[in-house]
Image (cartoon, rainbow, N blue to C red):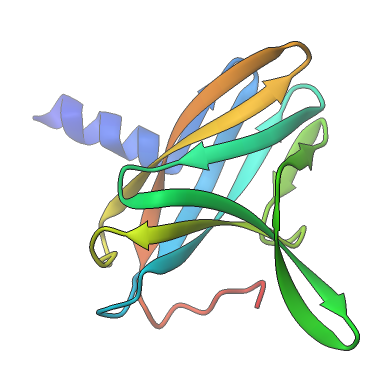
Amino acid sequence: MKKLFFAMLFLTSAAHADGIRVEHAWARATAPGQDTAMVDLVITSAHRARLTGFSSPVCDTGEMHAMMHENGMMKMREVDAINLPRGSMSLEKSGYHLMLVGLHEPLKEGESVPLTLDVKEGGHEIRVKAMAEVKPLTMPMQGM
């Protein structure tokens, strides 16, 4: 049981595969009836790469969004991919986030959301498994 606890603790704090590392992934708890949730994270790549998609068993669809100012208003747009520089990139600080769409049930504080990120680096595809911590509903989304 202790080994399982420490394995889950490791997955919650960081996940990595083939030079791609995911840390500080989190989502805010959802209100009853809310069927979408944002996920923010920090992704580090040993080389330039592209985040081409993601999925989670807690929702129907995973979407990637960019936040931008347009005509004095903040707008959210879905994007097909997110360019990842060599080094670390905070999705929230760079104006991006992941969206869990069609949640099967509300996200509850203290739970974790499994994620599978699809990254294209050079000529090959990398699948990175990560866990996003669910924080309190009252936690502000910094990027908003």
